[in-house]
Image (cartoon, rainbow, N blue to C red; front, side, top):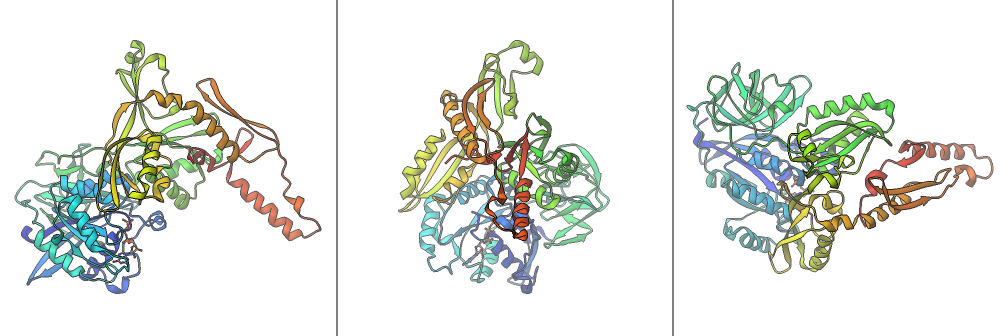
Length: 584
Ligand code: GTP
């Protein structure tokens, strides 16, 4: 296919602004799927995605589109759609020459619109703004166009107004992709070089990597190397994605497709990595970073006898997700388990849900924590670690103040967009979370965009839920900086310890004996609450002899018990481990 008639593009949007709906329409219009499939999920989404209505795994399709008598190959490179995955978004769009930036005609620009815009802008891509949902009764495309002009400096005339749901002006979107986007400049005469922008694990075929060819061509039987690990593989199968796999003999510069080459784990084809021919080594594409965990949590089987089943489930899931890190861990209260690292809280929730749904595993997840750094002062420890700076992912292993020069904590930039009625409230919440305001601008008469530098620890558990009612979320740049930990943080330990004891007191049901709940720093107890003994007889309410009712109550109690975890002899509800960390 001549490179001049190829266009590679992505759709980027804030959650729910209609990315999947538009993608479906584009697939229909180009005949990649038939309209009878309309209401089915075209792309086989994970259960978790369906439940939460978000896209976790990217899906890609090559579309053939006829425009003014010529056939064009339009490669729609899908991007995952959530806060935790901005690194993956940046890799997906680096395979493109342009993006469709979707904005909801009613909601207007949201935090994730801004973050995605900057990813595309920094990659110097052509940006086509698309205003979606113009069919809505309270759609206000004019206001949204003005926002786009103000915030992104894109003239209002460049916006395309569409309804992805009804199909209005969707054809125009395809035409503008052909007209406005430049073709890729890659040459098939150059040595083969491809970007891995997604990869999946398949039990029968091993790793299926989605690639964009930045030069040369790739054929079945070729020997290729993945730049990061430097391992060599033979290409067994390759082809186009339409969006199903269509095997072909060759892929050429500028094309997008999939390749299967005997890789056993997704770690061997990491997102952002480069593939090249063994015979013609090339320099790797810039911008690759191995996935970095930002959130860590302990994971333990509800019952220790499930340990090996859980281990095998965790192993299987991590085969398919190279961004999860796993370390063995054990806890006095919870027994043997693991400390897992995730890209963010959503990533962690998705992982846990998959464990429960696909592997039927029952797990306890401890409250998430962030990685800290300590600059050591003790010469002995520095020698032991071979360096001055160490990273701590488990709070139980925090080194003592006496051997540390300085503690550092991760900080992230966050963007919040909100109606101006909430400015005061949001500012006070942010202040309370030790955030530092960096910027605030009006994006129209009633909405402001605020930028804050947040200590990651302050927002990791419940910030999203807290803001949900006031703005449609915030967006974090996936760039971690480590900053000095403020002293006030330590001062807060006493009130935080007390509050946590009180919440635990609420979360743990009374038992047959008295329980003391204590908060401690090292061995020093800083707060304490008591849970009084209480004996609950569920049958007490049943007078008379209705045996079925009794059975029902006993069964209900037994089911309740399943959700409990014994810590020593104390029953603790599974959710308590995370819920106690949520602040009011
Ligand atoms: P993520 O996968 O989370 O990124 O969401 P998305 O951006 O793909 O949104 P999706 O396409 O799933 O659409 C979100 C909701 O908006 C769905 O209920 C759609 O039916 C609805 N929707 C999408 N386009 C239109 C439109 O043009 N008009 C109206 N009225 N609703 C739309």
